[in-house]
Amino acid sequence: MRSNARCRGVLAAGAAAAMMLGGAAGAQTDIAMMEIEGGLSEQPSPLAWIQSSGSFTTLAEVVEALHGVAESNRTDALVIRLKDAALSTSQIEEIGGVIRKVRDSGKRVHVFAENYGNAEILLGSYADETILQAGGAVSLSGLHMEEMFLKDTLGWIGVRADMVQVGDYKGANEMFMRSQPSEAWDQNINQLLDSMYGGMRSTLKTNLAMSDAELDAAMEAGWLTGADGAVESGLVDTVVDLPLLTEHLEDAYGDEIAWSDVEPDASMKIDPANPFAMLRMLTTPPDHTPKGDTIAVLNIVGTIVDGESVAGGLLGGESVGSRTIRRALEDILAEELIKGVVVRIDSPGGSAIASEVMWQGLRRVGAEKPVWISVGSMAASGGYYTAVGGEKIYVNPSSIVGSIGVVGGKFSMGELYDKLHINIVERSRGPRAGLFSSVSPWSESESEFVRAKMAETYELFVSRVEAGRPGMDISKTAEGRLFTGDRAIALGMADEIGSLDDAVTDLAASLGMSRYDVMNYPGPKSFDEVISEALGGFLQAPTSSQLGAAAAVRELLGDRSWRQLSNAGRALLNFREEPVQAVMPQVMLFD
Image: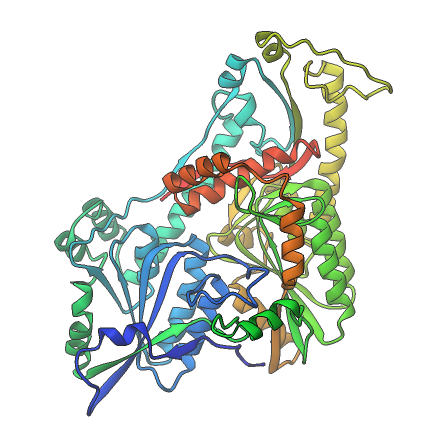
């Protein structure tokens, strides 16, 4: 039950205690250790109710735990250890906001990492002190994007892309139909990159108290620099070998240090030492029933598809299905104890039909309960289509918003068939039955027919945006344009800068709720459901060699770039099922 807050992380003596030197007799400073390793998911696992990894796996767990530190009477300071943390900029902004609350509570915050890249430096800038492992390196490189243009490659193998987009700045068809970006897309993506880079610089200048000139000098000096250069540049504060961290903090605080670990809430997890309790838990469906006044958090994360949500597969990542979301919305609507909904969106879009179906579901619930929106890294195209179904939209400064437009098409492989000496015999019945033939490209009249149908989808999209964002100048925001969160607010596309936590807290306050629970939807799956889905998808599962190749590419690119690639792949595969997509173009962002 929240009391102006939420269930908190657990403070416990554990691994961090091994860092103590000697006992804790006399005066002591109590310091909590939080470790963030790898990436953080935007939503809990369907099996979170039985899994107990002991580490943080979701953004919400980290935020909850940091609130717990801020409110703890047993903690004087916090050390956040980053272990190859793969965090998006929007996640860093949300974590950074709670770090400020920890500091406002009178506690000092230290960040420790073996190496500092863009993400570590950005997160560390919110802390009182950044500590670099002795022998580590620092590299503040800025932002770099790469786009692939495949027209010439496709032509070389005998494939022609017939793609039609509605929205001059959309850019979603250019990867397959051009060798270079169009002027409109070049303008669109460059202003987005400028805005993202400007936001990063603004945060660093504010948090590190640097001028533009000082930050320029720090970035010039801080490209793959060692310990001395990192401290001299001002990007980190000090260099310490991990075994000597306790001694460093004792010198800083003048007391002996008593360590504790900050861990995610481990309640309702399986105890492997008790097989009978394990069996009982596995055979009992998880209880997902509100016990008191509740704010629901509905997670719309991944590429939008028709049907059910799916995680994993060859490309990994997540897809969010309209059928799964509508079912969750009906559960929320039927539950009297749920007083309001915050929809967490982190999606590049996808199926136009599925986006419309989810929009209708949000409006249906919104007629009886307040529905607010929180945007993570992005709510683009179909993601933004869904977002305008809410009453109020929160964004992070770096959230990517917009891409109001649609794209559709097919790949014609007649020349490839000829090269491979494959003879295709086509047979059709009906006036448009062969429109999506894989052999022949569209004629001019067929292209115009498809464009007219897609224009209808685009007009529906625009009408949904105008209904949800009255007063917004659609001529400045539509046609596929992309914006960061701060610009989206200025243009009337969103309402406030704020995190998911801010949205939940503000919604509860607007409803006069001082004590409340927060419950995630879609809810957890029973063990039987997980097994059934696994067996049902066995024949469609990728082979071990495919998984091995995908794993190798993921290792090469890193988690963040892999997520971008998997979203692009899923969006491309969606064209097999639905020719019209509300999806943003895909670029690879390296930082």
